[in-house]
Length: 149
Image (cartoon, rainbow, N blue to C red):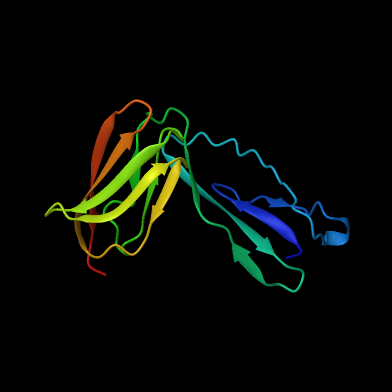
């Protein structure tokens, strides 16, 4: 795609294309620093707009704000549409299991190393999401509620 890249967070700065004449077949890297002093979690995504006006968005990325306690964050909780995001304190390898209240496994990830996880299409109900850090064997769990759609 050609065009400009826009980062959206608390602000909506626009970044100009790094490609000569706005067109490139090579991978380009863009950087923007948002001086965000939010104490919670801020979500960001990139919007790429072509010269013909067509655009698409990247996946949403969540960033922990200033003074945010180091812990796992599950949001939105409760979820209205069955989609939730999980933000971890770091990218340590971990095993993640989502179970329903009867203890049945709904989803599972082994050796997950990203600092964020997006879970989609959970049906309405109550769930437990359990994390086991493979390096330290520490375990933690959160409750998750999905309201009726």
